[in-house]
Structures are given as C-alpha cells and as structure tokens.
Image (cartoon, rainbow, N blue to C red; front, side, top):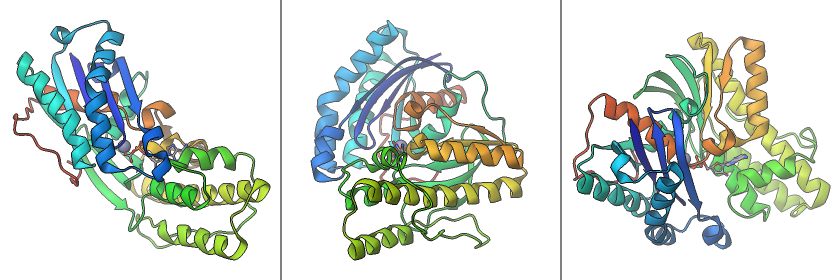
Amino acid sequence: MKILGLESSCDETAAAVVEDGRHILADVVSSQVKVHERFGGVVPELASRHHVVNVVPVIAEALADAGMDLAAIDAVAVTRGPGLVGALLVAMQAGKAIAWARGLPLVGVHHLEGHLSAVYLDSAEAPEFPHLALLVSGGHTSLVHVLDHGRYVELGRTRDDAAGEAFDKVAKLLGLGYPGGARIERLATGGDPAALRMPRPMAGKGDLDFSFSGLKTWVVNWVHQHGRPEGCALADLCASFQRAVVASLVGKTRDAARRLGARHVQLAGGVAANGALRDALRAAGDEDGFRLFVPPPRLCTDNAAMIAAAGFHRVVRGERAGLDLNAESSLPLP
Ligand code: KG4
Ligand code: ZN
C-alpha cells in the first residue's frame, strides 16, 4: 500500500511516498530556515504563506522521485496537529483535495506519532512492542510507553521548555541564529564539556518529568556576568550546556527503562539528531541492558515520510477522516 504523506506543522513543507509503512519511495522536505532565520524564530504567518507557495511543487517532486502519479497512490495521510494552525491547514487542505478528487482514504496523523513512527522507516530492525521512547523535539520532551502502533502512554514530560526549545533559546542568546540545536552541537565539538558546572535539572526527584528553563536561566545569568563568549569560551559554554541537557535526558530515560524493565528504547524527534545524545543513550543502553533504536538524523527532524508511516497503520485499521478534518494547535497523543 502506497501512502502519500503530507506535513506542514511548522517551517518545513514536506511530502513523501511510503510503501507499507516502511519503505521510503520518495521523501521531499522544503525548509524555510532562510525565511525565518533573520527573525530568530518561526514567524507563523510567513510560514503559512510559504507553505502555500511550496506545497504543490513539493508534492509534484515527491511523486516524480517515486516515479509515479496520483493514480498509484492508495491513501493520503496528513498531519492534523499539534502545530501552527495556519501552517497545518495548508498541507491538510492539499491532502483533502487530493483524497476527494481521487476518491482515496484520508487519515489525520498526530505529529508526535509521526516522530515515533520514523524508527520503522527503511530499517531492517525495529523496536518490539511494548517499548520506551524518549521523544525530544522543538515543542515537546516526553518519555512515552509505546504499547502498539497508535497506543501510547505518556510517563513524563517537561514542566516548562522542551529540550529543542532550550537549545534554540540558548543559541539565540549566544547570537548563533535559528535553529540553534545543530549550531550548538557543531560548536560543542571543539569545546570542553567539563569547563562549566551547570545544574542537573530535576535529577534525583523520583519522577520522570524534565525541566530546562532553569538551565537556560543559568546561561542567561552567566552571559550577563561574563559577556557574550567567543572562540574557545563559546565552544566550552556550548559543550557544557549540551552535556547538561544530555545528562538530564539520559538520566530520566535510564530511570524509566529500569522501572518498565524495557529492553528496547527508541529515541525520536528533532533533538534526536544530536550526536552527543545518541552516543550517550547508546552507551547507557550498553551498560543497563537495553537496545537503542534511533532513525538517521534526516528522519529525526520534521519530514512527511514519518507521517505516511504512522498513517499506514491507521488506514490498515480502517480509520478514515472526513473532509471536515480540522487542524489542532494542541492535541494529546492518541
Ligand atoms: O522535531 P523537530 O524537527 O520539530 C518539532 O516538531 O519541533 O525538532 C526541531 C528541534 C529544534 O529545536 C532544533 O534546534 C532541534 O530540534 N535540533 C537539534 C539538532 N537538530 C535539530 N537539537 C540538538 N542537536 C541537533 N543536532
Ligand atoms: Zn517535529
């Protein structure tokens, strides 16, 4: 079954064709980083306007890459939320139009279920159910017990900023531009992670929640006292900040895996592209006896292949969205 996946929840316009929820036949992502960069973050109305311009060319490119036309598509999966409503509506309306014109089944997909489904794409091995997921994106940071496709129990979440949001805010403060995660990671490579002792948020609290705003405030105060760092001092600050975020994420994931007796753990969402986090969680798994599954970095950040992968299981279960499907700015995991 070939699913056309569409995604426009934030600043990426994306279309993909995925077969049987696993095999990527085409995966096109048009990034708006250049549009939003000079504002230091995503400007919602600009995002919507650029999605309107890009959505049809991106779909056409995906179909061309897959070497097929719409006649070969069996169903359409679109992101229904959470995200920027004006942005979400663009790919959603394009998906509805295609489904209506071609008489195809349509399903709405939770964006985070998409991230949790990237792990099944183009990989020989996937985590077994039930398993534990650490979901770390620009808007969300959660530990999730994944019971089956489409069945999730959230075990803990951030009480304030998401991990990606903390990376982005610290990068902005340091004048590194938007989006900040990958830029901090690049600078951190040349720095000493032990140079600055930052707090370990929520460590030893006994629950599975996270908090990153205190860490961000620590960096704000440091910059007020010492000025904006350059050269080695900047690299050291980035490396120390990254280590503190990674330590917090890995510590709580280990606690959750221990509690559940989880043997399989997946790492998902944009921050999962971070090499230090991937390495630290893999090393923790080797020590604690769980196996880590993580998609290649390209499939960790926003894309439509993950939406098609999640949509496949919904279509197979017989789920159908009506043409009155609407976008949701916030939405609990199914
Ligand atoms: O999942 P995603 O693409 O979009 C959302 O659903 O939010 O995640 C974007 C977030 C941004 O905050 C970005 O800074 C972060 O993922 N990110 C990274 C890296 N690449 C992207 N954070 C740390 N290290 C990276 N290499
Ligand atoms: Zn995302």
